Image (cartoon, rainbow, N blue to C red; front, side, top):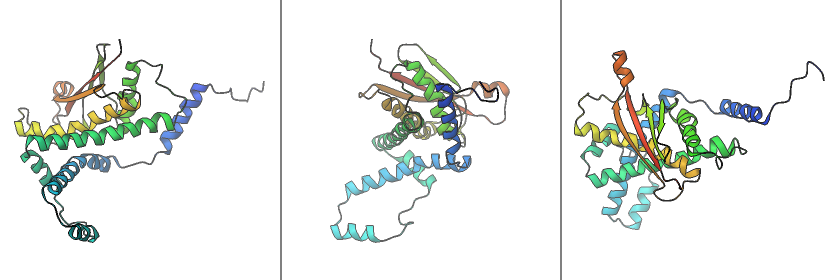
Length: 251
């Protein structure tokens, strides 16, 4: 054997190299711009739901509808994002629930596509069929979270019976919100839509990996004070989020 010849890579090493090349080939996006875009999903969902509600309340003629669609006015009916958030707070609970569900479904769709991107398209030989649920949740905490939020989940706990607790010590989408330690009911209501998107992402990933039955995955999220930030007495207090994921497992 030639001493200068490199040893042949194992199948696992080939997969790792393939994934590394895949990561490097992805288009790079400015982090600040991406986070702004991510946060704009909330007012966008409010705007879409408002328009759907308005269309259901008023019935125009076919000619009026066609005329409105043919007029190219991108600023027509435009409402600033902060006004849309105010509209969300002023909405009835059923309207807020529809908006929250829309955000959850946006995250669900993204979670499904991320699974295809990270696993099936890039690494078709990788299968979760024979892996336990804990390995799947580690994939969510490590690979999926890094792609969406630029960091991994900070802590993962489980009771080994289908319940998981995912702790994000610095949840980026709420980082820019000015929240008092004693949060008002209005502030708590404003936080809820920011937590729907990641819950949907988690559900979408698990759905693409076989947990497709209705009610198979239940995900809720709660904003809590960051214990690490309190210990360091940092002037900038970050907000932590705990995601409670319950997966129906077969006995």
